[in-house]
Picture 1: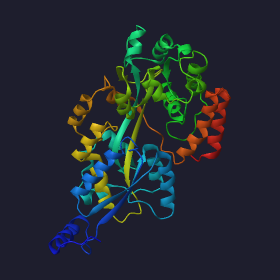
Picture 2: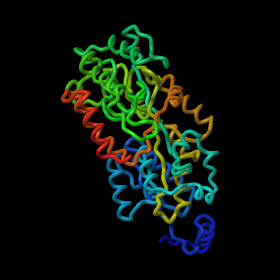
Picture 3: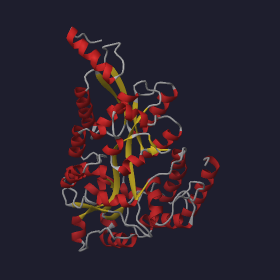
Length: 417
């Protein structure tokens, strides 16, 4: 326990009466926060936010239990199961829905009212709605992002091609990719990862999807999905506008783009910081092409108050600070660490003013076509069923028909709807 002069101790006791509802101790309040999204690139930014919060809230110490994406969720499940849950923790949107369904996070209505936090006035309606379950907010939207088509303007110029537009379809992108690709020279037209997340989104660009709209049945092996998977793998095996695993030679898709070896890549706004630092050519962004319709990924990382915490108000106040305090918003914008979620037009203006990339308004245009994961308690199990089959197709070890048929059967057998 820190030692304070009598007057300082009295100040802390009075402050605690109002902030914490109890005046029985002048001890520091330690809040445990489990997070993952900062990674290496934004770890210092998160620490800056935490320091600003602690400065504004004397007597409160934040213990940041930061981990990588996979480790975070493994550790969090273990901590919750053992009764050692942190006071607040970060989740991505897919896992948030599962945690909310299981009752692992507290609904925020009463807590926000007690804390005097006007959620509906502070946060953009769409992202706040995405944090709701059973008609009530269960999380603070910390940040959001979308996936876009990011393209190398120099390669388009050298091929004499017009740049992508928001009206582009799969056919437009494929035609451009075929004109640019030179496999013999390690130059590629497009890179779209053949894995669960990309497949989930692209099926919806073709009028498909993995489940019916009411969530009552799986539709993994639908005709629309089969057409989608054949189209995706044909870019590797037929038109050869995208490299195989062997041709990648251990390189990541971002490295391929930064090295000027691929004209178009579909990835998220979280790539902007690295691309801005490493790319020595002009690059821009556009809403992804669709086929029968547009569809793009909407991702959000949210902050939840643990059902087991004894400091619900303080935990919510901390999460609210990370998401909405002007110092936090400024730090996130400067780092281009995804997008703030506050309902403030000036934030949009500041974000768009930061370049590269060019045509940054596409980030917000893409929200018109956002698709979100279903509220499926066993969502991760669905990923674990589908992903290996897609990998087998990518490697030429399984046909698209067999992959989707097998995945459909396994999902029906293993997942309760």
